[in-house]
Image (cartoon, rainbow, N blue to C red; front, side, top):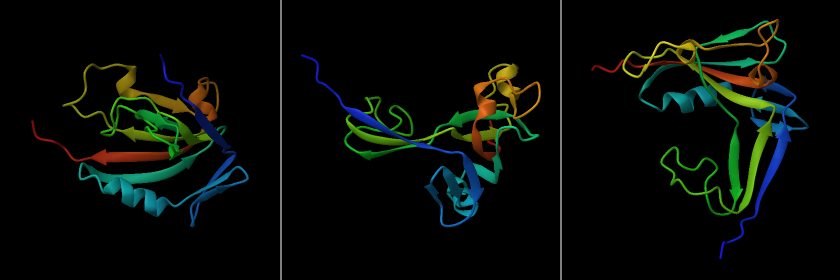
Amino acid sequence: MTASMNLTVGTFPVREVAFGAPAGWKDGRLVVDADRVAALVREDRRIRRVAVDLVRPGEAARIVQARDVIEPRVKVDGPGHTYPGICGHAPDTVGDGVTHRYAGFGVLIASEALPHIRRTVSAATDSLIDMSGPGAVTVYSTLRYVVLTIETCRIST
């Protein structure tokens, strides 16, 4: 017999993003504390520097060296993990309960591709996202972002 799971996903649409404090979401406006975000990123000893920027659709911006886009989610009730199988979490299911997500918003990581982790020279190692103009043709061009441009510490091989 298969157990039934009941996961509720609460969606909070993001129509505007701004820097400020205190951080929070209200009526489609997400306020991000850039200093707190930068401090949290710098807790990882592998990060040498981080720049925190905001980018929105239609803006004359090109994001280069994009490595990952993450939709922020948080598990607010019940067993399981928001992102199973990563960050040390077991590769189980998200479980029952309630998860909240920001719709139309992402955290984008931009960074150089380090030689010791580069597998091949390809579009994936030198990717870019145009936020406006003829190059803005992917779903990634439609999201609002906090962009974390990181410089990592070089690791001796």
